[in-house]
Amino acid sequence: MKNTGGSRKAKRRAGEHAATAVEDGMVVGLGTGSTAAHAIRAIGDKIRDGLDVEGVPTSFQSRQLAIEEEIPVVDLDEVPGVDLAIDGADQIADGQLIKGGGGAHAREKVVDATADRFLVVADPSKRAETLDSPVPVETLPAARPVVEREIRELGGEPSLRSAERKDGPVVTDNGNVVLDCEFGPIETPDTLAEQLSTLPGVVEHGLFVDLADEIHVGTADDVTVERL
Ligand SMILES: O=C(CO)[C@H](O)[C@H](O)COP(=O)(O)O
Image (cartoon, rainbow, N blue to C red; front, side):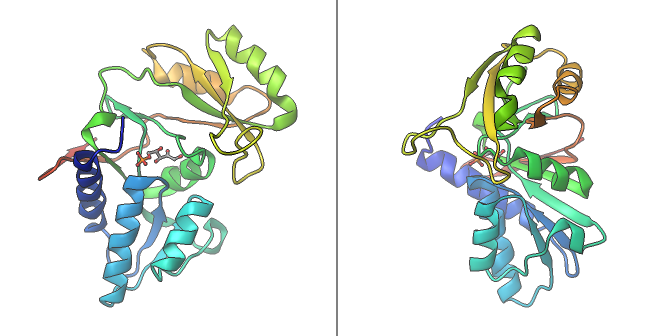
């Protein structure tokens, strides 16, 4: 979907609403993408008002924004745990997610899964009856042909992610490539998630099954919160 004015407002409302859950002393997982960026900016505002938190970025992009917003940045191995994570999603159906539009899903999954509470922030275009978007699969570059073959065995059609203004494939923050894998409607995301996780050469896939605790969906003038 195009990032229309309405969608921008909806993303902003969702991000800012989720940021109200951030409390003094927390370690907060900082998601990736335009909706999570609104939450990061709102946390920055709270810090300038005296809030004391630390942020665990999920990508180069969220780290840069956190630094601009004066959020003290820490790595996962420097903190005992993550109290709250706020992150976006590419598609949401029945509480399950597809993530990885920004190619950051490997770090996002570690941070979001480890958080005591994981809040998803989105605009209404992300909601679907059934997950059917391509599933991003981060893959070791040398394993690409092997993983592509295995994905086809599972009934998927992989396509190497490339960027409009870059020669060659998109390379993730971890130095890997991303295969966007078309499976059609995914009736049992838990089964596919398990199958993808077992493939040698796969670093991480973008199916986030049973990880979200709350889904904050913004509209132009409101936010709905679904607790799972
Ligand atoms: O999974 C992600 C990055 O890997 C993002 O959270 C997802 O792509 C949503 O992005 P946006 O909020 O810009 O629509």
